[in-house]
Amino acid sequence: MNGWILAATVALGGGGAAVLWGVTTGPPARRVIAQNLATSAVCPALLLLSQGYGRPAYVDLALLLALLGPVGTLVFARLLCDDLSEEGASAWALTWTAAGLGAAAVVALCVAVGPGRAMVKLLVVGALLISGNVIASRALAGGFRGVRGG
Image 1 (tube, rainbow, N blue to C red):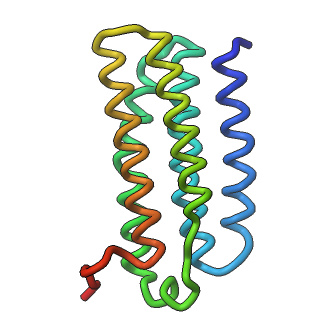
Image 2 (image 1 turned 180 degrees about the horizontal axis):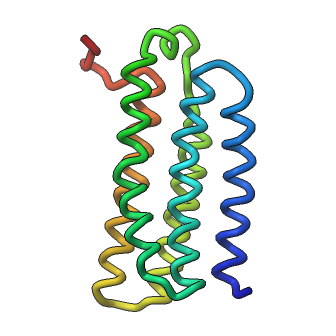
């Protein structure tokens, strides 16, 4: 076991426990937030595992997850908008903590792989992960000013 695999294990363990707790307890708002957190925890772990095992295909899985995870959260937010508006879902501290984890993982991996195509791919995954989860969290917290669901 190397440091990359250990870091991925810690990320999956901590994120997985929080996701499991959020999904199994509480109202629908907490469950949707936990679903969004799952993307934020698994995606950096896949990037770390990619480096740890030397398998670049894991980066492609992380890219797919970073792209589709927040979209799934937005679909749930749209379908459960009445329940979410009554409960006032908000998880900004959790969102920024997860964004920090993703950013730290991407920066560490960029330093490890050096300049090149792999670094560009890591930066794209990081940008998609962080921006997608911030947008999804904002949608869960009540949306954006001036935008109303119909």
